[in-house]
Length: 211
Image: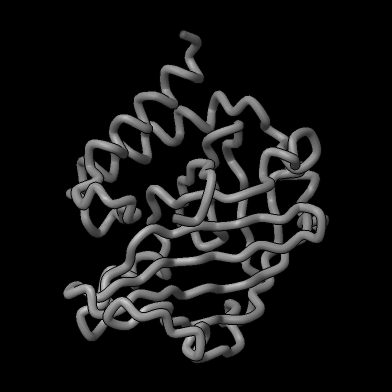
């Protein structure tokens, strides 16, 4: 086993070990003690150092295509999903990328703790290569422009509710005074690591579907 695969396995095994819910819900640093969060950062840095595609947007953009499931994040917007009101609880979180038209959407499944209802929150967006910083970060950084935010209830008490899917559509929030960016710091066929312009970390694995 080469060093890249060894470090990747260590990171995946550790992330699996801290998945307390065992339901695919992403883990955030708020759920961990300082030592655990530091270990994830250490292993992430090691894996980024052996990235098989250091210029992914130029050499391997096709690897971005498809559905990705979020495993771990330190982002504020992901942390906020841990404190939903009215007995709601976040489930699996996905990002679906279409490189043909430079679009993606983020989708967080939501259920009630008593099983009363289920639904999702979805945010659509477009992206482009950050040309201004292509010399310092060649083919790693994308600019992100969030578009719409959808709130949907798919079922209530087991009954499908198409009239509530979605029940609210609004403009998505973009950062004030700056363009949202994402550096793709590791990419292979099954794992992706990104770092936001605010320093947030995202670790995702390739998924076959949205379930």
